[in-house]
Length: 251
Image (cartoon, rainbow, N blue to C red; front, side, top):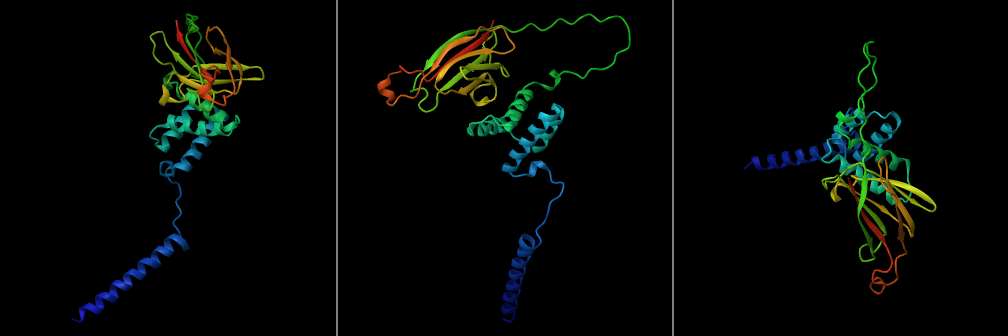
């Protein structure tokens, strides 16, 4: 019978010691990690890390180093993470330096490492090598042009683009230049892989637009009028253009 009080006192002592230990470890002298693995960072800090990687790549253009840094984060889907950050930057309504850096990094990451241009090196003198034939410039044609209505775009007017190869397969990293009376902008396919690697879109204010495929033989598509959102979408009956769907395909 004498063992009961001793056990209770012991448990009370252990409990108090545990609480004091937590206070010391968490409040008074918390553990400070040094040389921590970037993969152990919380998601919000991983996002900041990706932004820093894109900013560094904007300065040194070292894609190999950028890939290595991204690999340290052990992201489940690096492309999706970068695209989400680009989308957040776009929500500010300004083409910020961070958005520019992230977009460039996303574009370059879509090219396999073996396709990167090698650094020039000195070669011993000898017979002049045979000239390598230049890669032909791709030729695109517009195969579908559909006007979108307020039922398709009830809130924000959008230009939707799809780029495909001659076999109808989606093409990533295709640049599309968008022009209007007071400015221009460029979007690239593949930045929203959930919509398809050949997809790109652009939020369009009321104006008249023209678009052209960059670095390719492509006729400019013009007279892409976007009107203001109608007060009554049902009564409008699709009369007001609220965007366009354009499908380009290689010949």
